[in-house]
Amino acid sequence: MGNGKTIIILAVLLMSCNYNNMNNKNDFYSYSKIDRDDRIPLIEPYSISSDGKGKWIFQSEKMPLKRLSEWPVISVGIMDSANIVVNAWRLGSDSYKIWRIVNVPNDTVVEFRTEEEYLAYLKKINIDSVKLYTDFEAIYKEFDKENGTLPSEWVKYQLK
Image (tube, rainbow, N blue to C red; front, side, top):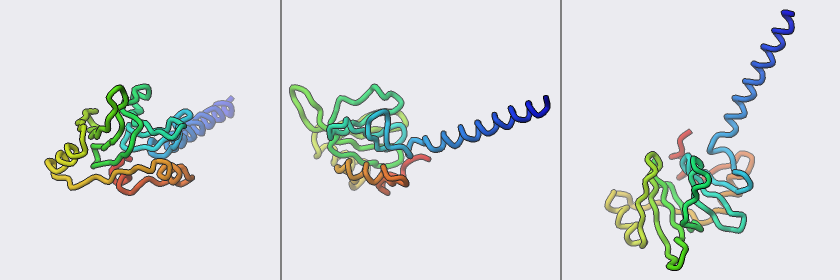
C-alpha cells in the first residue's frame, strides 16, 4: 500500500514537471503558428499572422477574433517597449493607407492618414525614425527555424 502511494506521488510530480516545461516552450515569443496561420510575435499580446494568401494581419492574441479591419499590413516596427507602428491599408469604398501607433499597455491607438502626419508626430515626441519591416515572409522563415530569431530591433523590447 505504501509503494502505491509513492508511485502515485512520483507520477504526479513527474507530470507537473513536464507541464511546466511545456509552458516554457509555449512562451509567446517562441512559437510560429497559431491555429493554421503563420505568426510573428511583436510585443505581447500583439502579433502579425498570415492569412495563407500572402497577406499579413495585425492582431491582439488577447482577443484573437478581433482582427483590425486595416489589412493587409504593409509594414510594421517596434518603436520602444510599449509601442508598435503598423502601416496598413484601410479597405472599403475609399481605400487608403494608414499609420497606427499602438500603445501596448493600455491598448490605445494614435492614427495618421498620411506619412507626413506620422513623421511629424514622431518628431514631436523626439523620435527620429522607426525601422519598419516589409518582408514578413523573410522574417517568418528566419523565425520559424528551430532556434528562430526575430529582428534585433524587436527582441530588445520584447518582455520575457
